[in-house]
Image 1 (tube, rainbow, N blue to C red):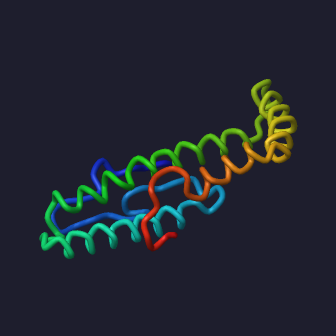
Image 2: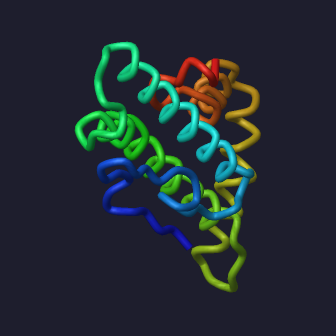
Amino acid sequence: TRRHAQHYVKANLALVGDAAHTIHPQAGQGVNLGLLDAAALIETVLNAKQAGKAWGRHSVLRKYERWRRGDNAIVQRSMEAFDWLFKQDNSLKSTVKTTFRKRFLPLANRLTPLKNWLMGQALNGREALPKLAK
């Protein structure tokens, strides 16, 4: 079940990982998102401290929220789409999904540019990565 907090931050408080968003467990992306959230929050706080800003201010923590919220939403929706694509049911829709999987996925695997783009999206191509994640 997908859940996504309307706001990740308040003054002196930031939600990361499953506290901010949940995701279908497909492909283990939930842990990855949580680690990226933590790295982005650390980078945001360190940048604020280096600039002499109070790192717990809402305006500072909002940078972290803006950085991660969109990326998390994209991954949530993508994992729901994969879940839908691979879920079996007894309908014409299931037959269409099976045909798509049998024809498109092997083709995508053979087309190196498409395969590389899809892998990049899954690994890090959505938003700027935190320095700790590079």
